[in-house]
Amino acid sequence: MLLHFLPDIQQGNIKSLARCISLIENEAKGYEDFLRALPISSAKIIGVTGPPGAGKSTLTDALIGKLVEKGKKIAVLCVDPSSPFNMGALLGDRIRMSEWYNHPMVFIRSLATRGSLGGLNSKIIEITDLLKAAAFDFIIVETVGVGQSEVEIAGLADTTIVVLVPESGDEIQTMKSGLMEIADIFVVNKSDRPDADQFVKNLQSILAHGPENTIIHIPVIKTIASQKKGVEELAAFILQADTTKKNNRKKALLTEKAYQLIINKRMKDVSKNDLTKKINQQLEAGDFNLYSFIENY
Ligand SMILES: Nc1nc2c(ncn2[C@@H]2O[C@H](COP(=O)(O)OP(=O)(O)O)[C@@H](O)[C@H]2O)c(=O)[nH]1
Ligand SMILES: [Mg+2]
Image (tube, rainbow, N blue to C red; front, top):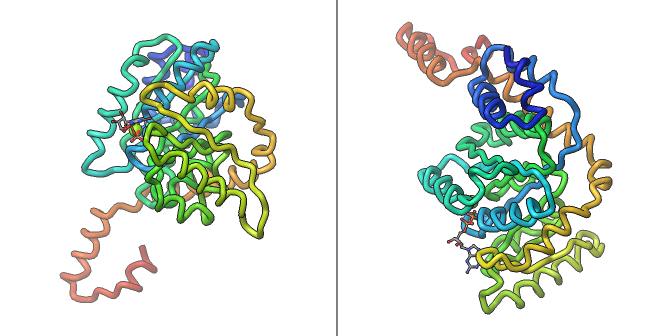
C-alpha cells in the first residue's frame, strides 16, 4: 500500500513524502517491499558533521540559500543523538532554518533518534534512500559528531563536510584517527573569532603530515555562518565535487550500510522488557543461569 505513493514522491509531492517517512519510521506493513522498489537515483548526499554548537545548522541554513539560488532542490535531514537536550537542539535547528520550512525547493525533517546499538540508525539510511528517490538534487544530513558518528555519516554521504570552530582543540587531537579519513572538506566556522587564523594554520599543518608522511589534500575553508560569509566557496565545492573517488569506496560504504541494516533486522525481536519478564520467571523458578539463558533465547 506504500507503493502507490512512489510516483507522487518522484514527482516531488511533499505531502506523500512526509507520509512515507512516517510510515518508514513506524515500520508500517509493506515498508520493506517499498524500500526494495525505490529506484536508483543520482541525488547526492552531503554529510555535515562536527561538535555540538559548531554552527552546523546555521551553516546548513546559509548553504541552502546558495544552492537554491542555483536552482537546486534540497532536502535536509537533521539527526541529533538522544539526549536531554534533544528537543532543544531540534528546536534550535528549526529556528536556524526557519526561512526554509515552507519553501517549495526545500524539505526539512528532523529525526530524534540515533542507533541504540551505537551504529547509524537504520531509519537514517532508509529515509535518506527515500529522499534520494524523491526529486532532490542534494540531501544534506546534519549529524552531531561525537566520536564514531562522524565515521558513520561518512558511510552514507557522497561528500562529507567536517565543521570545526577555532576552539576545537580536542577534535584536532583525534584528527589523525578519524576525521582526516572522512572529511572531503574542513570548514572552520566562527572565523570571526580572533584565534581562527592560528587554528587554520594548525589544522593545515596536521593535514600536511598525514599517516605515513603522506600529504593529504583536503581543503580547509573559513566561514562565518551567522553572517553567511565563506558559504559561496563551500557551495562551489559541493557543486563541483568529484565523487568518483568516493565511488571507488562504494563497496566499503555499502558494506557499512548493509551491516547496520542487518544488525537492526536481527535484533528486531529482542526486547529488554521481554528479557526482564523471562529472567523474572526463571529467577522465580530458582534455576537461572545467564549462559544457558542466552543460549536458549
Ligand atoms: N560568532 C559566531 N557564531 C556563530 C557562527 N555560526 C553560528 N553561530 C552561533 O553558534 C550557535 C550554535 O549554532 P548552531 O548552528 O545551532 O550549531 P550546531 O549545533 O552545530 O547546529 C548559535 O548561537 C549560532 O548563532 C559564526 O560564524 N560566528
Ligand atoms: Mg544543529
